[in-house]
Length: 288
Image (cartoon, rainbow, N blue to C red; front, side):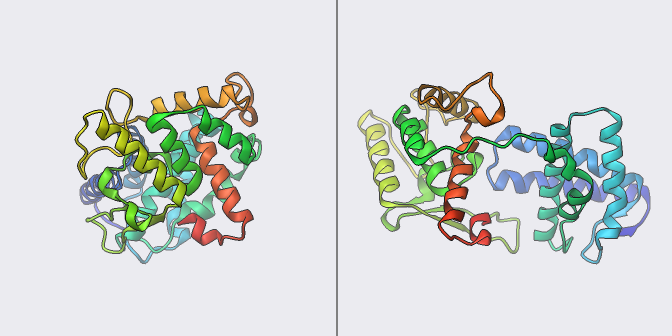
C-alpha cells in the first residue's frame, strides 16, 4: 500500500470499484446485493482516497488499519445501528477478498480488525433459530413448486440464497449429481465451484423441470432454474415470504418475536452448516 497524488488515487479507486462490481455480477449476486456492496465499498474507498492510499500486495495489517479506524469513526459519528455498521464491514471484507483474488492484497485486514473493534457489536446479538430435522421436513412439506426446490437445495447444500436463485438450468449436471457454479472470467485464480447433489435433490429437480416442460415451457440451458408460478425467476423477497409462511404453519416462525423465534431462508443454510460440522465435516470444506 503506497501513497500517491489524489487524482491518481481517485482514478485507481474508481477502476477497482468498477472491477469489484463486475466481479459481483459475474458471481451472479442479486442486483440489490451488488448495489449495496458497491455503495458501501465506494464510501470506504473515499476514506482511502483521503489517506492517498494505493492498494498493492505488499501491505500489512498496520498499513490498512488507519483507513479502517477512520471508516469506523465516520460510521459511528452518524449514530448508525450496530447491524448497519456490521453490514458495511461485511461489504469491505468482500472487497478485500476480491483484491486478494486479483493479487492486489495478500490478506483481508477486516478479519483482524473485527476481532478488536467490532466483536462487541455481535456480542449482544441474538442467535438465529436452529431447528430439528423433522421441523425442516415439515417446512418443506408446506412449500411447493420452485420455492420448495430452492429451500431443499439450501438445506442440503448450505448454498447462499443469492447463488441458488441465480442458477440456470445449464448449471446443473444431474447425470453426475453436481451443480457447477461457473468461474468469474475476470479472475485469474478462481475456478468453477462444484456442489454435490444427493439423489433426493436430483429427483426433485428432475420432477420440477418436467412439470414445467409439461406445462408448455421450453427449457434451455439459459432458463432460470427456479421460477414463480408466473414463470419469472424467483426473487429473494418472494422466497422469504414463502419460507416464512411455511415456517409459520410449522410453528417455527413468529414474525413479531425475537430472532431466535423467526425463521428465514438463511436458517436453512445455518441448519445445513451446523449439521455438516456436527457430522465431522472440516470447517474449511464447509466454508468453501
